[in-house]
Image (tube, rainbow, N blue to C red; front, side):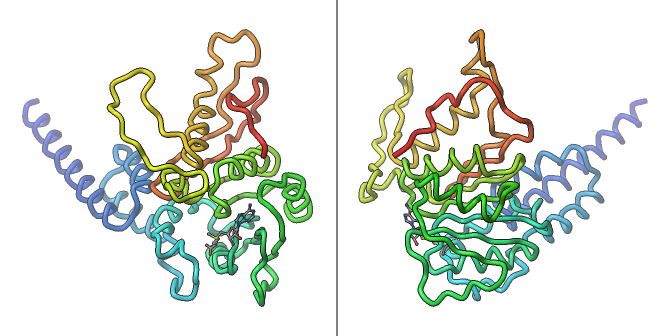
Length: 291
Ligand SMILES: C[S@@+](CC[C@H](N)C(=O)[O-])C[C@H]1O[C@@H](n2cnc3c(N)ncnc32)[C@H](O)[C@@H]1O
């Protein structure tokens, strides 16, 4: 009995070591977000499966298969693709509709077109890039991200069944981002779809229109002191939506679950996945707002 127990114990240590080594290896090649996904599988797999899944995992890192020098978007310089890669993996080879708010010179649209070979990529901006040749799989529309009627017109024309992925890289101003988010999320994002909000840290910048320098206060009081300027305030409201079920606890009518499957906050991007169930009942914990 003891020998068996010891052998089991030794093999458990061996598996634990291999898992740990694999985690360290993964750490070198993937972002923190990917690690969360990967580490949740640690206990369910043998090490042989682990090595296989690591190879499989690396093949999902689509940006590693593209010549990134060909695209002039600052998403590459900012390291954003390390965060995007693992999160976008489920959509890679699907027929998808992707909408990006804020296109500047159009380079990120070219990146997304090549990243998702079967996609249709739609872009909107206050100003459309001069001389941009969009080709068959990219379409551009001129308008404001906070103009909900305009957003619906674009959506009805290009994605009547809803977008699979929406990326907001436009104003980075809290109220405008919030208006676009709730309108598109509620009305034009498919169930299970992904909404990415870039550069939410502008809310910590003194020289951004609605940002403010972070003022560190001792965090001993209740309520905790809370920086809530611009995009940072909006992102904190998203946490309230994720807490919808707890917020509504004890309310007689309209109890409901969060509209979000996941809310993932990375240093540069917030990712929200839409729940696959239909949410009815109570309205948003926080008003959806308008400008
Ligand atoms: C950071 S750039 C986009 C960069 C582009 N996504 C890329 O990766 O190359 C921001 C763009 O958002 C646009 N923009 C700013 N405010 C906007 C608004 N309220 N509605 C729509 N577009 C806006 C600007 O004109 C600018 O082209």
